[in-house]
Image (cartoon, rainbow over all chains, first blue to last red; front, top):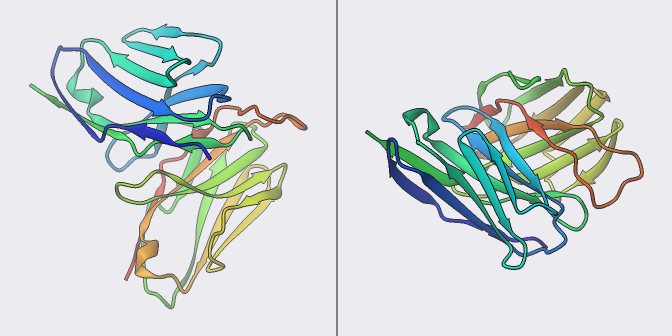
Length: 110
Length: 118
């Protein structure tokens, strides 16, 4: 099955860039997602990238995909206190099922 | 507002109680999902309904019973739960393409029901 791994914690100062990394094992993944979960809330879709792309930019968010290394990253430019949340990487496996990582807790300090 | 609502948002129940979680999606999707989120563990897919038919049951104990009366509503009936069932239960929906394999349409999540079993 698919294994999706993320680091558990990231601390970043307000105004700096955050980079959240994710690795996966199934090379047939077609869609790769980033979700954000704020305290007490459900998952909010942030962005996604199709496997034939290597970069996608959406305002302060930049997604990079390295298919060779099976590595996905999310960069948040000019990180704000409202960006404090848990960020989940999710990829589709060869059956089209969505597999999630354990989530990265991002804490933004003033 | 994600278009997927869940009620109740919080629920405390004893091990002998029977309760139900409700999910409603306003996105016109044809697939709905129940996930369990426990602390420090990846999300666990519990049930999948495509076109109102249950297509997946990930070895979930029978004390959890799903019901999908139509493509907009999904229920999770709870009976004689255990304390280890305490978690955040998330509902999601997506628009699946009939007959497609290996593709995954984007899933949109509700806010979840925080369940505590005493």
